[in-house]
Every structure is written in C-alpha cells, then in structure tokens.
Length: 317
Image 1 (spheres, rainbow, N blue to C red):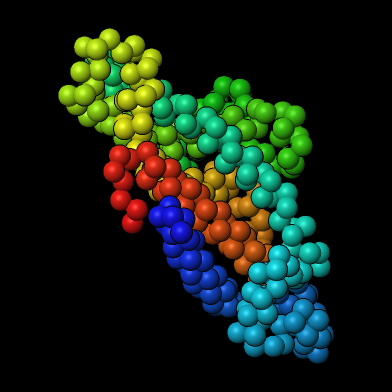
Image 2: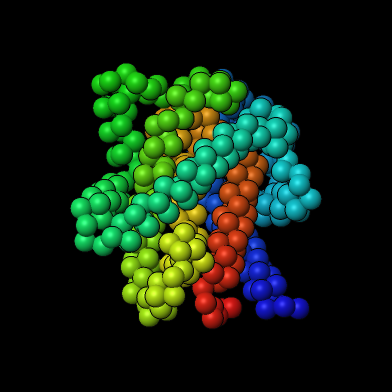
C-alpha cells in the first residue's frame, strides 16, 4: 500500500469517528428540546391517549438509544428513514435543499479559486506597490466583517437602497433561482468575499517568499519565460500553504453557506435544518448532519492530499 493511500485511509477512518461522535452529540442535544414530534404536531385538544398513539406510530415509544442505533444502521445502507413531520422519505425531503446548497457552494468554489489566485499573485508579484496595498487592504476588510454583517449591509445598500437585486429568495425554488440568477448574486458576493480574503494574503505571502528564492533568480538568468516561470516554478511552490488553508476554509465554507442561506432565506439546508428542529424531526436532523459531516471530511481529505502533493518534500502525516 502506497504512502498516499495510507494517508487517505487514515484520514477517512478518523473522519468517520468524528462524524459518529457528532451524530451522537446532535441526537443527544435534540432530546433536550422541550417536547417531541408528537407534542409539536398535535393540537392541545388531543388527549393523552391520542398523543401516545401518535408516539407509537412515529416510533417514539422506544428508548432513545434504540432509535439512534436503528436509524444509524439504516443510514449506513442509504436509508435515512421517514420524516416525522411530513411522513415522506427523508431523502425526498432533503433532496432539493441540498441541491440549492450544492449550487451555492459549487459556484462559490468556482469563483473563489480564480479570484483568490489572481488577487494573491497580482499583489505578491509587486509587493509594496499601490496595487498590493489596495488588494491587501480589501482582503483584510472583508476578512474582518462577519458573514451575516456583510450580508445585511449588502441587502440594505444594494438590494433595498439601489434595488439592483432581490433582497431575499422567499418563495423561490431552485429552478426559478437558476432561471433568474439575480437571486444568487448577493449570496455569492458574500461567500466569495469572505472565503477568498484569507486565501489572497496566503497566496501573496507564498509568491513573495518563492520569488525571493535563489533558484527563481537563476531561472530568470537562464532566460526562462515569464509564463513558464509562473506556472512551473512559482505557482506550485507558492500555492502549497494556500491549499492547506483551503482545507480549513472548506469547513468555513459550509458554515458560511448556512449563514448566508438563513439571511437571504434561500431554500437550502439551513432552512430545512431550522424547520426540522422546530418540528423535532430527528431523522431529518440526523440526515443533514451526517451528509454535511461526510462532505466536510471528504473536502478536507482531498485538500490535504493536494496540499501534500504540491508541497516539496511534504511529510505524509
């Protein structure tokens, strides 16, 4: 077994343990909420017998540990159970919310890499210049503003003040969002600005450090072209630390997406999770936590692997 394979397997096993602990914590915390699904769904006019029958129908009459282990055993096979609130399969309930979140996260990633890479290289290749000072100041500004604050400022100034884009996506589904991309402009602006800010400074620092190395000066003396110098010598060595930071940014990207969805009322995972908590819909809550946890682990493993491959003499730890 090769070293990279052992590295990936070790990270996956560790990640699986982390997800399992997270699921147990979330399930335990959900039990501390007042009432259960039967209490939330039923009217105050229902009798104690009717509530007991509802609990039995939903499977709430068994011990919490049994419910959790049963759900976990089915979830391993891809069966997330049935929603307490709607009676539909959980996979059908969360399909569109995850599609919305995936679109937002995917578009953010597509825009993030060229924006952060261009700004970092533009600043790092001419350190101390006016361009460098402006780009660095802008990245520090966006990095210091919380996601929800930046979102509220954009809603107030751009959506309500100028009327350029919708302030929220209330009542809008995914097909409508794709047909009218204006609904995604402000959320994407918040996501890209916040996530790209620290990456810009890391890329800048990496470019400055690499450009100061003797072998870069030697390559210039030997007549290596500017494009070849950037792509073959500077970029691979300068982007290593940024790739590691991108792995940590992956977690922030997921949490940032949820915050942005809540502010702009996007019909994504955040809205589905809030509704599920209100309904005490434990199968939906656990399914959302499981999927987001697995995605976070997978993203971190891929980013760590890329970072190790791009780092000269990288240690496979």
